[in-house]
Amino acid sequence: HISEPGKVTVEFPDGSKTDVIAENLLLATGSKPMRVGSVPFDDLRIFDSDTINRLPFLPKSVVVIGSGIIAFEYCEIFHMLGAEVTMLARSGAKPSLSRIGLDRDICQALVDNLLEDGVTLLEGAEVAEFIVPPSEDMTAPVKLKLRHKSSPGPDSVECDIVLVAMGRKPNVKLFEQLGCELVPRGGAVKVDADFQTTVPHVYAAGDCIGAPSLASTGEYQGQVAVQCIFGGAHFDKEPREFPVGIWTVPEISYYGYTLEKAREDGINCEEGSASYSNCLRGRVFAPEGLLKLVFRVEDGVIIGLHVWGTDACELVHLGMYLVKNKNTIFDLMGKIFTAVTYHELFKAAAFDGDKKLEFGLQW
Image (cartoon, rainbow, N blue to C red; front, side, top):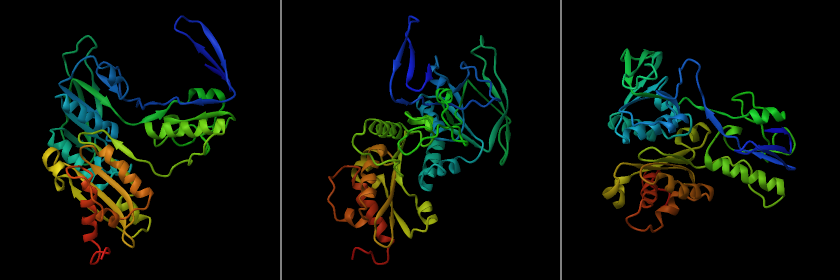
């Protein structure tokens, strides 16, 4: 409990309490799943993305409601565990992925891969009614009556469990107790460039301050806040770009611009692509995958990287380095990469991009 800034009351398992006094507070209270009122959550048959981790049995059939990153990740998880998976997306699956920065071809690859794995995707579908058996009957299926907005589909689906993954919201109760101002849209804690709230000496980091709500950015925000508190080394505040990793099978990662967003911002750009089968390691171990470089036409400077495939979440860091250091596709074309590595894809994508320039700017 925090009764006032700088005073934290801590309760121990035996019930005893003690006060901790500090000049500054850094709170990272995280977030919790959105629980839509029309969904009868019971954490026995109908779960959110937190309570699903306490699932006591392995279901044979699962319905996942949602079309964001968490929904896609859990579809892959339950498919890998051998369950029959149905995904209900109120709107199109690809548009919701594009809104968070995924490349159009990688969106398509992700959806195609899901369908090839046998996942049933019902777009434009929502639940009209949940019919949940009594808690003592774990053998009867949950029945979901459906309505379809755009295209025809089944009247209902049955499953062992339902996972509702329709976003998360910040945990802000402690901040409200302290009188901290919240952002009107989304209800996250309002902070400045040092991650200090509107109450002096109270700082916030992580999901509680809203997007992007990544573990990596939350850690960085905490570092900036601590450096500000103690007056230590300088950090670049509020980085405009950060790498994103999505733990589907195979992985997805990206950094910087997509081709569409860059052109929308008035940048004359092109992209170079390389299939994983373009390198020997990919051809042998993981031919399914794609790496893309987005670059400016005028000078070949790389402004974005998008990867779908094995080790994508590792490969993104070289892409981040290339973008931050304003390297060009011509730099990559002239470099020697170790053979039988996925990093050879960067060079292959650079050569593919060069083909799209008039005569090739390199020469």
